[in-house]
Image (cartoon, rainbow, N blue to C red; front, side, top):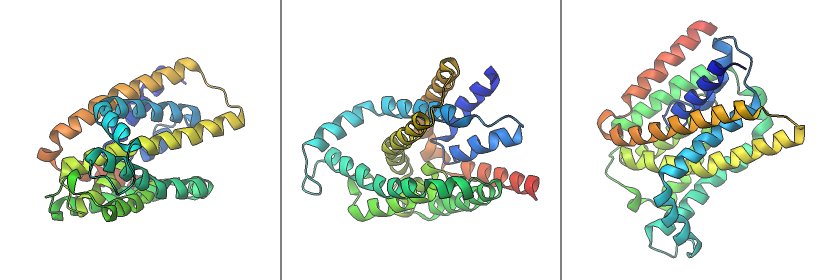
Length: 265
């Protein structure tokens, strides 16, 4: 696999993992559109772990407080915000973990289809626009409740459909619940940490089981590019999301989905 391909993989993953545009759809579509061989699971793992390290480093101060207070607390019996966020992140991760584990083969065999990606890209883009336009956006993370977490966790299951966007659907759910844009985005990014970690562990175990071999140089290139681009993407998104809103990403999703439909049909 040539250097340009490796750089593009890391670039696309770093840009799209946290923007509400679906990283999985881009990684699936890249080899189809430019007629390159599929990058394979090894490089997918490299790309995802690059974004995981990026989000952990970016939120390292928040995570220090969340983890330290969380381990000292009991669910729903501590008013400390960090302790509550600790348990919120755990409970919001359970639905997608269960469905993803037991439905992995079904999703891989029947949902990684370009037509499904195109339709999901447009439909969930429109839902993102509606939630951004109609949500009250008068709440922050101090107002999060167990009911909110249940809804966000259930909504995150839809991210298993390529084209949905994990960050996109969790931000959509947060906006519908009245969270402001920055809070919805921040919680979505924090929630990505356990999800990416568990998915990466699952994929790593699958690689070990199959005895797959990785080129360490290719792995490192994809990992580093994904990590650096993701750091920049997170920072810029959180800086400007209150000003730009979700419309630019909705327009991009609509154009991408329309081009895919034209290409397929």
